[in-house]
Image (cartoon, rainbow, N blue to C red; front, side, top):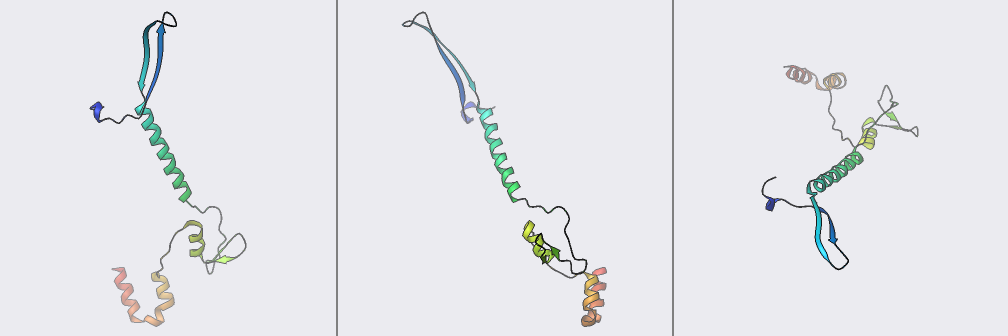
Length: 128
């Protein structure tokens, strides 16, 4: 526990009773005290953890179940029957941000006639 002077005290619990032979004569004082600092600290930590967990649950967004997706354009149909780009649908429901690129297969499929030899050199370089 260390030096008691360095310890932060969060609370004490006490019971005091007066002992007397009659209403006018005091014989003694009986007292019981307990340091409940550890209990109070644990209670404080528990409250902070509950707050953190509630914030985490509030920030967590999940997608679950079946998503109707177009097998050609990959748009997703929402509950109202409207079709949305997959990126906008996922962003709207989870907050996920997207960055875009072109995979090597699509690069070759869609851009080979524009890039010609440059594409072959690029793909060779990527495979090394």
